[in-house]
Image (tube, rainbow over all chains, first blue to last red; front, side):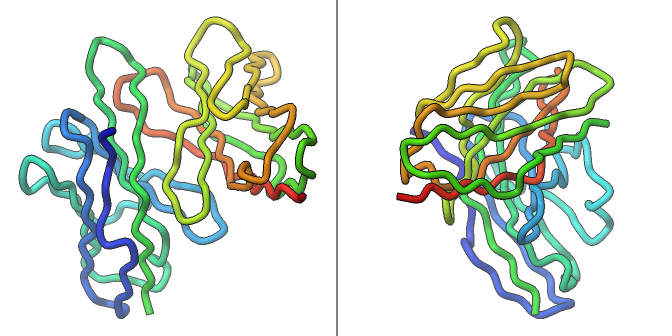
Length: 117
Length: 114
């Protein structure tokens, strides 16, 4: 069964360093998302991506964040200069988004735990 | 904007007992409603969803939920829980548009005791 994969599973970095979190969405999906979950808090939407551009972003997704689909399979989240408060679990998700329906299930990856020291 | 409130952060329950997890939402437009489950060290898995039609929806692993429009609620129930149901459960909504984001509640941690 197709699934969303994410690498690495755990990333430890120093404050101020750049990190890139990688995701491989399900191959025929058209919409891609990043969510984050700070320990003990709710899952929060960061950004959605469709047709090679950002379709929506939250107020959390400031200039320190960027997303990219560098090839036909990967979807990355870059944090340019990490802060302590960026420590969280980051989830990638994808959905097909087609078929003329307004509903398509989002499939989530297992997450990358980012720890900023 | 939409918001989701899960009234219970933790619910301890004995094995084979029933459980109900409460979810209330707020939205100015019609929404789809979801329950996701997160097992330890895993991603989010869809348990069930309400799109339209019958207000009682059944999902995987014996869970069901009832949509109540007047009370803006979507409570999750299971008549008899197993140890394996120990997990965190998230209620979520999205507006009715292709590719739209999910807005999650704070989660309810269910601990099933033998």
